[in-house]
Amino acid sequence: MSAAAVPQPRAENEPSVSAARGRRSSLAIALLAGALGAALVLLATSRKWAEGTASVAQGSLPQSANGDDITGLPGALAIVGLAALVAVFAVRRLGRGAVSALLALSGAGIVVSSALGATDKAALEEKASKVSGLTHSPIHDVAYTPWPWVAAAGGVLLLLAGVLALGYGRHWPAMSGRYERAGTTGTAGRA
Image (cartoon, rainbow, N blue to C red):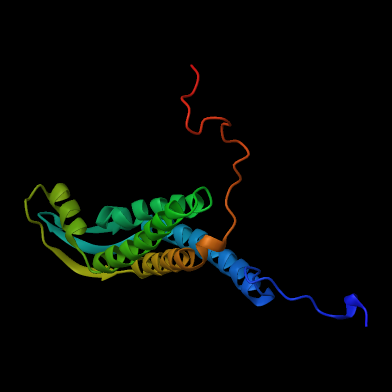
């Protein structure tokens, strides 16, 4: 019997083929979900979320408000989430966990703020007050678009990317230390 015929035992630390495939697919899903989610949120917040009619002395005046008029939070959190998605690969260990949590929290914040803004008409009333010159101008015939829910769906995708990063991120590749300064551990840098 030759030594080549006997299968070699696998090391304890060596991941199985299915585990390695699962880690790679989690990385691909997280990157795709995070990028798509941020793009959806940024697109949705620039679109019209609500429209209505303001009563003024000369008759009625149509008013509309986009997502940024109603709430600026989803757009801002989408940018934070996108930055956190990129930063996941720039940090290691504890930093990766913190950045992954920030990514998940930004997704959750987008979902909540978009859902709250889906039926908000305060921005329409504020625009009507500026046009009419009255402090409280009533808005009638308010109609809402599906764009807040598109932003919420983008938030769900960012949340998914954050959860995947929290669960599998420690196995994902990191940026190399090739460009870090050498010789600065424990000694003061030269001026």
